[in-house]
Length: 223
Image (cartoon, rainbow, N blue to C red; front, top):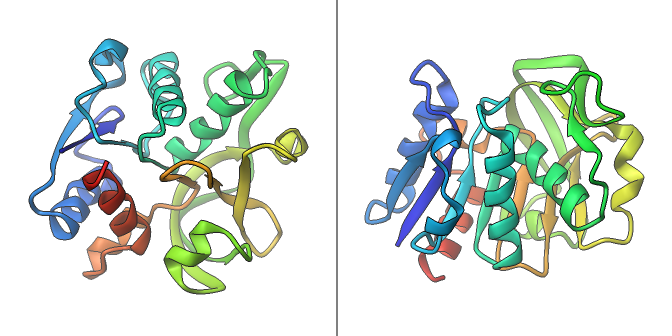
């Protein structure tokens, strides 16, 4: 079994240091492979039992990243997207499941007519905030709590103006911050499909393996 880490590795990014540590601590026998967004070949994804779309966007090749997310979602292969991965999971779904072909990332395309991913009014750089989990969500079941305190490093997120387009779909927002803004999403009909605006991998720096990561890796191990 092998996990594909989708993103452009940078040893300066704390999350990129944390991800391998979290995997090794939670599932030491599980293999993983970093794949730069420029090097993605959608015809060579079958060997992976799970996909983790990691932080530090914008990615060098956003369209390749979206293709991987679509593959994981439609083939029902465990998927975790943290920070940038969360944003692009929502973008992929809006485009390919809901039909909003014009949906885009304002960080990449500032003049887009549909900035589904847009700049946050308040940047979340090395910030820790409380997150409320939605009753009945898989995320709440995993975390076994109504609230969790999570770390962020992001300047972009889901534009609240377009939240309504997801209503009634298989994708729903399963966590919110104190202002009611969405901070996690999931597709419950899939084995595991979760995206978080926060970075659960950072918990490994304090010696804790986050339950989201534990559950994701367990799902990938039994695919």
